[in-house]
Length: 583
Image 1 (cartoon, rainbow, N blue to C red):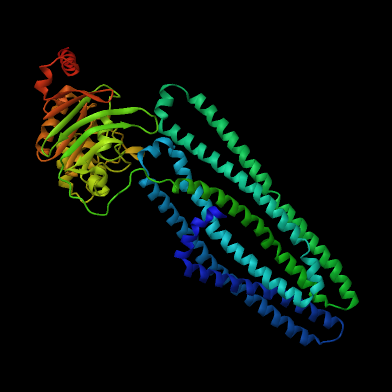
Image 2 (spheres, helix red, strand yellow):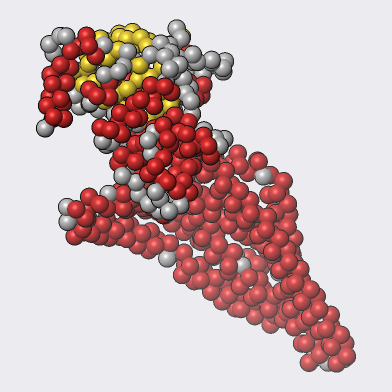
């Protein structure tokens, strides 16, 4: 259970609730123990009446008293069992909630490289299915374990006090049960780990299939996808069946051993009764006690299975919780960002692919200035923006803001000072207004409209039936590529950032809309440091400075006019796009 030690911190958080729950569990169990003893007393009273030792009225009084005690004990036991579930099971839900938050917070802290190396479906499986398995350990397993231990201690203590030799025979099969459970638990642990791994693979496959359903349909590969799903599903089914086969051994084995205990009680107890060493009611009591212990003994197997599955799941969770974020905050001192941004001989190689994206890149941009970055696909344009936002850290060279190395700035302050429009616009399954408000949560509706107007998307939004309350994503309308880009631009604008990073965010809009957005941006960015990545000369021609990248290195730099006056990539691209526009 070493992997489950991580969960102990949550038990300490709710220790008083748990202690109360455990006390209630003991009380509920104590009331259950009363019933067999009173049934045994009732049988002895009936036998005494048949033997002529007591009168009918005495028998009636004894039976009435015992029946009332049995009913009262049953009611109290039921009441305290209800309270037991209200404490321990509720605590398990709290633990589940806290553990999911811990996992989610860790996911948020982890670097971009982590998400490139791990699949979304696997991440989802660990925060849902695996956490659910751990909850069973934190709730039902704990509750039933306490009930079983209490019942065994009280019941067997009473049985030993009443008839030591008969107790010895009654519990004789239990060591065999313990050894069997131990061996079965090892097998369950191994097979549970495999089952969770295949569940994660299945989740990943379905998540990717649903996300890429348009590609699957357009290529007509539904049949092949179905075959792949069936193969993976069948393998997962086989692993689950293998686990179930081992789990299925628990209950038959327990019933067999409990049946053996019953036979021993009847045989040994009968002989002792004939010899006159025990009362007839004692045999009845022991039979009830042995059968009362049947469920707790069965619970031992079930709890063992739950613990083993929780151990396997927590191990998978711990694998991600132990991952250290590559990008961390190196200072507690708050940083006031003005916006002077400098790269000095920056080189960068992606750790996951080994591809060198930048080579000795140097430039400086000050507040109020716009730097445009242009170049072929894969030349390193987007990498510069990722380094500015500290999605990765600079390896060689230095990147500073306001003369301070970016690593030494407060990470939250740095990110809060940036408005970033990525190349692939991502919108959440929420209203258009809330998507824009992701840039500024406390923004007013007028500010949202102003941002949408500057991004040239206000008229489109007004054309929808629910306008800004239109829900995007799975439950509502899906915007066009250009509309998504413009909503993303509005999200960045409303933030009023010190640094505005635009990563080829006008590629899906027409020339007229592009010109309108650029004119609006020129007013908005008067006091901002702006970086624009684009494939279009029309998007970058008004920039204060333009750098041209090729295979990660700067091959040209200057203003639009300066670059047109020299032969090279920029002039060729301008002439090519000018001819395309004329055509």
